[in-house]
Amino acid sequence: MDMDRYLLMFAPLILFLLVLAVWLLMRRTMRTRIEMDRQLRKDSEINEWLVVFGWTDKIIYVPTVVLSLLFFALSFVPRMPMGTLGAVWLAVFLVNFVIEEYQIGVKELIILVLAGVGLFVWLDLVGLLDEITKTLGGIDARMSGFAYLAFALIFLFAIGVSWIRGLFNYVAITQNYVKIQKGPTESGQQISRGEYSTVIDTADILERMLGFGKIGINFRDTSIQPISMLVWGIGRKSRRLESIRGAITIDNRELPEPDSQ
Image (tube, rainbow, N blue to C red; front, side, top):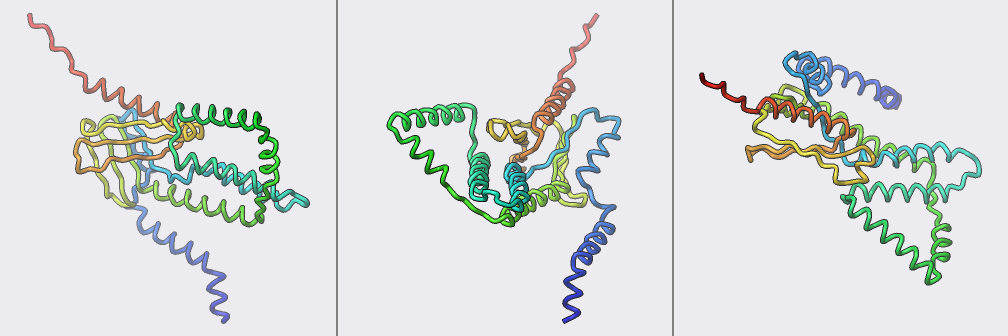
């Protein structure tokens, strides 16, 4: 019985030591995106590069995670209206769900806003707006503080796993090639610049407002599956990618032949 208790007490330490031992054994063969970025920075022949990986779609729930942690802290405040906090949390969660589940462009957003305004005007004209407002105001979505913490930890775990996976599964784009890295060792594929094209997708306006967008890579060789990555900081990364494209265009431009005398 005492042995089981000691094992439970030292389980986190044992797990940490195992992870440390694996890292020490494989650190010479690991090729993380951080090391790749450092390697490209030191390469004097490469002026422009971009190393990116794909986040999980659950990264869109960062506002819900932040709100969950805040409400967990507020749950310890005496006389805090937990029912109202739950209703607010549910509204934010549903907005995050819509952003993740559906692609909403500018046209769709304008239609939704106009439809919502029209609905409110119609409800006011028929005298139902006050009743619906009172009903919604009386919603009591009460949850315990630890429920907020549980939701936050679940989303943080999914986000953390995708970040760790992105250390070993990433794409490095340069003026000369694109390197597709899969796994923690040297396994990967390098494709020359003329054999692929890139696409920037920021059609989802709500997703873009949160700073996210998609970078896609298509290949001439149809046996290679196209790549689509949800990236954060899409504005800065798209400008970097456009700069790389510009360098490729200049390099591929045919120089005029000298005039013969």
